[in-house]
Image (cartoon, rainbow, N blue to C red):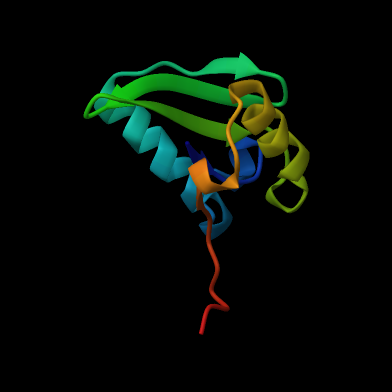
Length: 93
């Protein structure tokens, strides 16, 4: 599962905080997968090299996206070890 964090609304589309959503949008486009609502997130389902692949875009602000991500994890019977989280972090050292 690849989760792209960001903030909702067109005013945030091209901000650095939306890099996670832009990455999963690009992956969905390359894989020709459509987004579907799933609770408080959009999910694109597909496969990569024979394995199931889920792309996820929480539909909440990135600093409160935990419940949306948890919902998708529980729905899929997945755990944190199945999760790749894409987000901006300029404070990484």
